[in-house]
Length: 198
Image 1: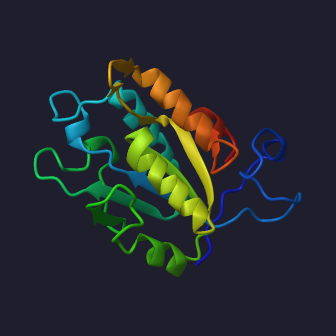
Image 2 (image 1 turned 180 degrees about the vertical axis):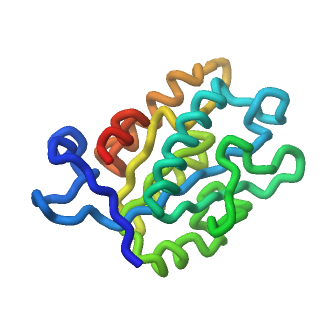
């Protein structure tokens, strides 16, 4: 079965890679990859991120749009016991695939790739946590495997990082990671721009 995202013509110019190359040409079949939006990243969890609620709220909006359009949704969760449940904001429903991973990249040691190819997916839309780790790893791997990638930047969250005596604030980690991915491995857009383009 083929799935597609129909984008306005202006998206061709505003967000290259989101829309078809030629007016009237169908956009590539797409699937949503929700990476590790799990309880342990929220307040009270073992690894709380900065503003995970806002990111999850945006991810839920993107999820709702995929469900409404009947497009495939894939949930990925990291294999942890304490707080390992997928957060209620993006909890899977019947018919949506859930893959459990033990590595950083969801393509490492899982059947995610074979499932995407079985569906005929050409483009993956990614949201999730942490931006600089599992989300970035999934995006780079997907690109290297031949998929077009769209990252919804404000539907991702990260945290402060420390290296030696230097602490890098989450906002800087987020900006740096998205800047690295944008136009090289993915097209990075915000939730409103993505939803407006459908």
